[in-house]
Image (cartoon, rainbow, N blue to C red; front, side):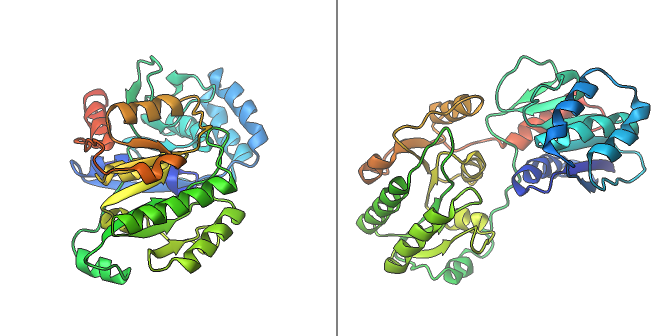
Length: 339
């Protein structure tokens, strides 16, 4: 039995990465998972915590620091085989609990100034040259598609059996992907045009990043095109967990290129994926090599909004053969004798 402590910031996108690794470990071992949900008292305090931890503060102070910097963090007082967490807010308590509980720690995110040696293993999508890093093409998310009763699932979404199903996953404007309101209007109109041309129906969802004015625009378009858009989820108005249903049902997936998590889920779903970018897209930092690698490996085809109507569906795609979580587990199995 492997005892794993999962530290979560309660953000689904982050927790799902940690659970993806745990799920893969559980395929090979019996696993018992304890979860501690954490929240920093103030984002301003991150710099102070980073400074303290980078200077190898004595472990005897860590209980006090956790109480001082985190709200109501409680964990089981028992032996753990490892600690796993994802996201910057979890990084500090991950380090401290690893010392308090005397067990290896695994961290899935960028270090943001923390010394890499404070973690036993770092899961990353880019090479940083650390001896303790495990590099994967994309985040090791957990994804379980519902193929056991596909006909019933399709019926529940009122999809017609003689038409293709396309899923459209919409994020929002960022510094790297500056989508305007006109961009979103053109994008959804071109998607409808393309769907009519190829006898397809659309399943559309926005995300927490989509702004209210964009959701209002999409809602208006939906009201006039329900013969093509069979379902639209406006996440910030009435959230629904539909991504896995959408990916199960989709013949093809379209996703705005700002959302790394939705892109990763679509690739793991092994469906042809077109990512949609604005003309002024300018990915930076770790996101730039992430997208470039996906394009080079033919996991995605990246198109500008104005090119949507030119899609031929003859573009080459490669299906991912090994899940990132499998790659992580294989490395952990070699490096960490507690897994």
